[in-house]
Image 1 (cartoon, one colour):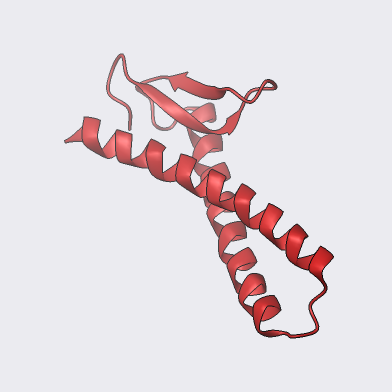
Image 2 (image 1 turned 180 degrees about the vertical axis):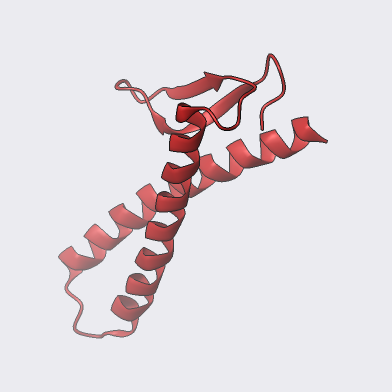
Length: 96
């Protein structure tokens, strides 16, 4: 929950790649719930990707192009996960 006058970092960026923020003190608003659901999806996808990465890395027959795609996808998942962690950490700090 964001405190009054606090901005919540959203789990997506704007069209130009800049961060998006939400100003609300209603943690049950439509955008708050959408952000919560998006964070959950992003973390779930990161977990699935990590499992896939572990399988691909132990397979000696994995093609270099597949490893490059894996690295690209892992980079995106890490970026999303860090954004979620930053947002949640900020909300915890302001809540305390």
